[in-house]
Image (cartoon, rainbow, N blue to C red; front, side, top):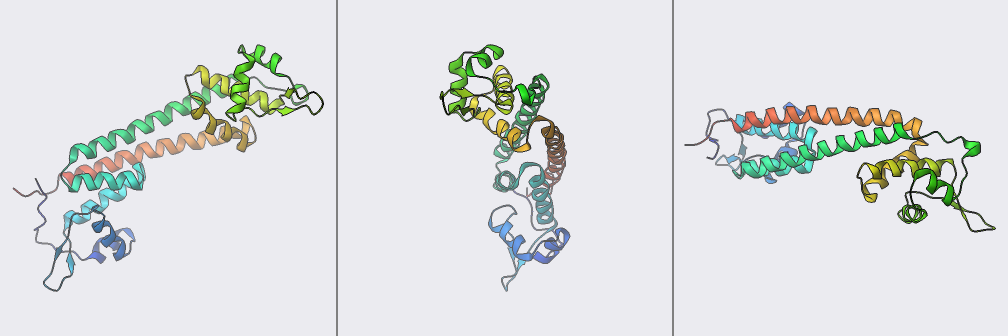
Length: 238
């Protein structure tokens, strides 16, 4: 069921490019990559496009906003080789990733809500008291340290691990996320984000931004789906 590219209207590369503020070379590159169907050629070798090519370009650019350039490219390539099942699989995987990102955000928000404030002047502690406070074994804290999730300093005289207020906060966050079923490798970037933000309070703004980005991706995926459906509904050859 290949699309009928023999409609009356003929478009030049510049006609497709101008609508989106692109260069004509970008349009030619998209065709070469399989994002657009192959264009017909005039007797002199010039490309001629159709409204269906224009719809394909609109679909691709809409998909990019929700799924990213790489996935959008793969989706359009699959559609243009008439493998819509593969295109739908790619879309499903992208939606599943968005859902997983939402779950991660909720887990981080829940973990941060459960953190207990650690006064700076009383924040230093040792592995034994901290492990008892969290209800875990000292070996677990040492395992988290090896994974880079908790970074206590060493007392220069005794060599004992000393956990400052930020270390206690990190240990609490790791503990909450582990209770939520997250793996250490999944937790590492979240702890890094807390550290780079300078603590939990500044991270609240980052979490709001994160939520806004997820919502934006979801909305963009809807727009991309509508544009792709319009392309799939275009004229087809018998």
